Amino acid sequence: MTQQPGFQQSSNPYGAGPLGNPYGQQMVPVTSEDRTAAALAHASSLIAMVISAGWLSFVGPLVAWLIYKDRSPFVRQAAAGSFNFNLSMWLINIVGWICIITIIGIPLGLILLAVSFLGQIIAHVIGTLRATKGESMNYPLQIKVLR
View (cartoon, rainbow, N blue to C red):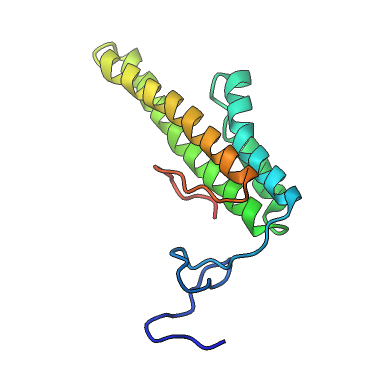
């Protein structure tokens, strides 16, 4: 395969992608098992939100990442994105509670908690639906800890 001028091989861990792929990732066929595992990585955050009032929403994606990090690039990317997004939402949640505890910041704290809560629900539902279709989800506001 020859390269066209202006395009370089990327150092992406998933490989260099075909022309027209804005992320430089290689388009690999995704199996139904990968789609299911990626959907569970996204949905596990929602399940944990219900069980732990949002405090353990990062555990499910972390477990999925640990299990699939060497098996499937698609599941690894989904779990890492979900974990990174949950970490940032978790920190926003903590800042919101600190604002509420200090009494002066109650309005700001309530806004931060609402943004965190609604952001997690909306983003994880979209991520779960995309994963079932074999599409990746690029979460906003990620603190990139896992890759």
